[in-house]
Amino acid sequence: TVALLHKIAQTPSVRSVIVATSDKAYENPEHGRAFKEGDPYGGSDPYSASKGACEIATAAMRRSFFAPGGAHPAGVASVRAGNVIGGGDWARDRLVPDIVRGCLSGDGTVALRAPGSVRPWQHVLEPLRGYMTLAEHLYHDPETYAAGWNFGPFREDERDVQSVADAIVAALGKGRIIHDIDLSAPKESHVLRLDASRARDRLGWHPVLDFKRTTELTADWYAWWHAGGSPAEITAAQIQHYTDLLSETV
Image (cartoon, rainbow, N blue to C red; front, side):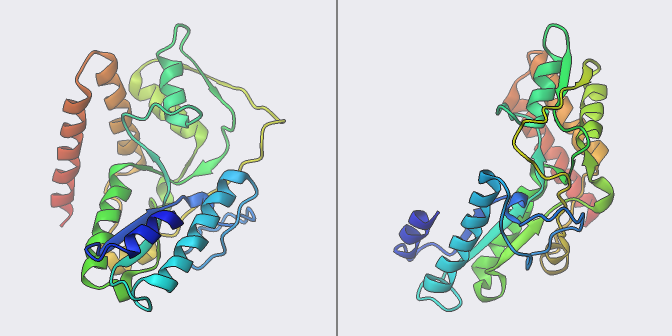
């Protein structure tokens, strides 16, 4: 991140920079409260600590080289989304891909390691829209918008891992959920919540997909792919559907 920002500082044409970290960048004392942008960074595991370090490095580079105090006019912002889900994700050790692989396996078994963990789930298109909105504001007014921002779902759409698995299995119409809790596994936060009121108040951004629609769209993508459909076609159709929903909320 620092090397990239150094290169950008030498490129006068750049006007907006978005550095994406994670909701895990915050120090989490497990108080259950939603994290705000002014809360301290940290992490009790290497991944979380690396994201907190990235936030600190980004803020230091912004103060040293970029607007409002530095020589380069670009606005640099850092963003933290919730637990992003959506079609096309096949990464290992991620909840939805693991659920889909389990559902589509021979015996349909879906093994959950932490069924009670609560996360701010959101469809990938939600934070992406927020990032693009922020980039536009940075271009026009870097002094105001060069900061850290949270993009997360409404509180009522936060769910535990079990609820996500139940929803995906129901939408796919197949799968058998079991619990496979490993007490020797590295510690993970039990509850993660994001307060996105700054983005709602100052950017006019807010989620348009509730939890039910988020999981349905995600499951629909994988069901389409499993049936032999074109990933590009279903992706384009879902983007259009999302765009139509946005126009209805204006």
